[in-house]
Amino acid sequence: MNRKIVIAVDGPAGSGKSSISRVVAAKKDLKYIDSGAVYRAITWHVLDSYGSVDGDAAHHNDLGNIGITQEFSPDGQVKTFIGNRDVSMLIRDEKIAANIGTIADSREIRNFVNTLLRGWADKDSVIMDGRDVGTVIFPTADLKIYLDASADIRALRRIKEYRELGKNVDENSVKKQIIQRDSEDTSRKFGALIKAEDAIYLDTTTLTKDEVIDRIIELITIKI
Ligand code: DC
Image (cartoon, rainbow, N blue to C red; front, side, top):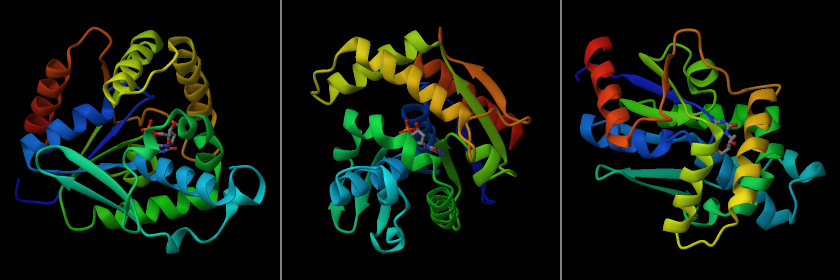
């Protein structure tokens, strides 16, 4: 691909956005940007600094100084940093998922994140995943995909992911959390999860990861 392109991949928690986007990025020589990891890193920072995301802590104004960065390596690995500290593992904790709603609801924080993410996509062709990439961050993206799957299958995928990270999680609490996050993500006042009108809807419930990757690569070939 010679010209700079932007591919937006949105969808609910556990729909496979991240694992699929990073493989597509590696195969198509794109930079992968994980927008959810930025909200997670901010949540981690607020919890670490203030002990809670409630009250003024969620509206603090030092975000510009904490130095959030992300590195994507062409083998499909993504790392998120706060300053020099690699927080990639820390931000995958269940405690982050349980507290992230308050952070992601904040309009100031969303504005900060959107500006940061647009800057990261400034020079390279990118595939970015999240909730509002195709609607708010890049409304003119070259290709928009909305990945979906049933809540049960998404919960099972998250449980597998946690277990692969060596975490012992309670299945019921993960399912509850997926349902809670769906409700938070779709009802958010700013940046709610909603399919962009021009996004292509892909239900991955009965598809394998490879089938979804092939379909997206096919769409890139057809549409771009
Ligand atoms: O993609 P993820 O599950 O790591 O995202 C975690 C949370 O971050 C998600 O539940 C809501 C928030 N988020 C958001 O509000 N907007 C985005 N573009 C990406 C994530």
